[in-house]
Structure formats: C-alpha cells, structure tokens
Figure 1: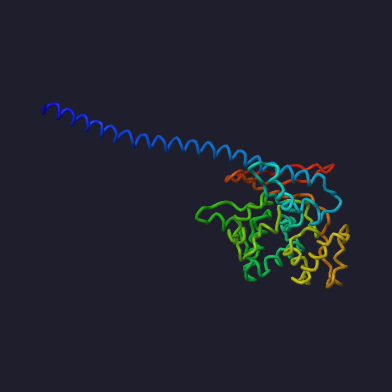
Figure 2: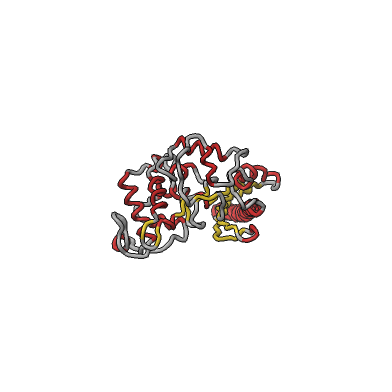
Length: 321
C-alpha cells in the first residue's frame, strides 16, 4: 500500500514538472506565433501604405503634366495638392494619402552663388539677406562666415574666402572629409558645410530651415509667383515684411495677371523698387512629398520632377521610407 502511494506521489510530481515545462513553452510559442502574424500583417499593411503613397505621387505628376507651362502660380491645382489629397479617403477602404508639391524654381539657386571661382553678386546679396532675417536667428558675422563657407564648398579652388573653409578645415575634423569644390548634387549636402547645423538646415518650431528656401535644381532663376515669403523679403534691400506680404496677397488673388515679372510694379508700396533680373514666372522643377497610410502604417515617398518637352515630367530623384 505504501508503494502504491509512493508511485502516485512520484507520478504527480512528474506531471507537475512536465506541466511546468510545457506551459512556458506553449506560452512562448503562442507569443512567437502572434508576433509573426502581427509582423506579417504589418508588412502587408506597409506594402499597401507604400502603394497608397505612390498613388499620391502619380496624382501630383498628372497635375503637373496637365498644367499650363507658360506661367506658374500658387493659384493652380498642383499648388493646392494638399487640399485635393483630402479626398483620397474615398479611393481606399482603409488608406489615404497627403500630397504636397513645392516649386523648386521659387527657391534660391544655391549653386549659382559662384561664377568661375568668384561670387555671383546678385545671388550673394539675396542669400545674405535671407540668412539675415530674424527667423534664422544668426548674427551678422555668422551670416558672413556661412556665405563664405558656402562659396568655398562650391568653387573650384582651395583658397579660403574671407572666413570660409576649404580642405585645410574639413580634413582636420575628427571625422575628416574633403571639401566638395563643385556644385551641390543634393540639398542634403549642405549639412557638410561648416556652420550648417541640423537646426539651421531643418529648422525648428522657432527657427527657419535653410533647406526650405534654397535649391540645387533649376536654371538659375527664381519664380516670383511661387517664391516663399522669406525669399521675397530677400530679393532687395528695399524689401521688408510688409512689402513681401503685399506681394504675396496680390499674387494669390486669382483675378490678377501674373504672366509678366513686372506685375509687382502694381502692388502698393513697390513703386520705384526694382527686383533682380533673374526673376521669372515659369517653373521647371518641382518636389513632390507624399505620405501614404493604411490602417496604422505610414510610408513616405519624395520625388523631384523636371518639366521637359511637351510638358512631360522627367524624374530626377526618388526616395521612399
């Protein structure tokens, strides 16, 4: 009888040991299986979100191809892409996209800062006035040194300009690299230039970001019809916030003719003020940013399109994240 009781006791202990091993294994297998299911679902949703984002890109491309290339303004459909994309929810059961189109031709052509190995005086003046705006929070000396450093990054020689920076500076850094000594290929290259901090490049809630007002694309002109207000303020020493606001209000009135650059002569406060000769009313390069979402997953696409012959848009750059 004692042997039977001992056998039962051993059996109970063995069962408890087996359960003690099997329950954690089962729970871990369940967690792993659920994680794999969720991972597969997120992957599938990510693919859907990416294609939703690409749908927004193709909408933007179509808007630009249908646009009248003879004059570009902020009153056209492409400039209101964010409003139009709000209707994307009706196209997808659980997805939507938010599309924004920026006119790169309305920005300051940063590579035009240098002609040969010397300053382009007109663009130097515009860039200096832009960086001197209160929104950038830079001191006069910082502006001067930064513009010199930008010139040195672009020009072909290795002689520092004023308080600029050439190879002697960049190769002495903790993580050394060479000065470009040539045109910027992408706007992100500005982060390599001495003095261009992340905050200055990207901007913050309290500070303007340089990348929003300069471009590496285009033909060296600035479209006065689409230039951001800070760029308008930098076009002349005679410009101020009030005049720039008046120009902005005038060009956003669809009843005004913006087909000629000198439309600004008709704006209150602009009498006797001459703006740079590099101004235009036509644009050639556009940046499309689109965020696509499906359920809780978001994917982003960014493209640079250049208007070519017969208004066909040519893809210059593409990025998706």
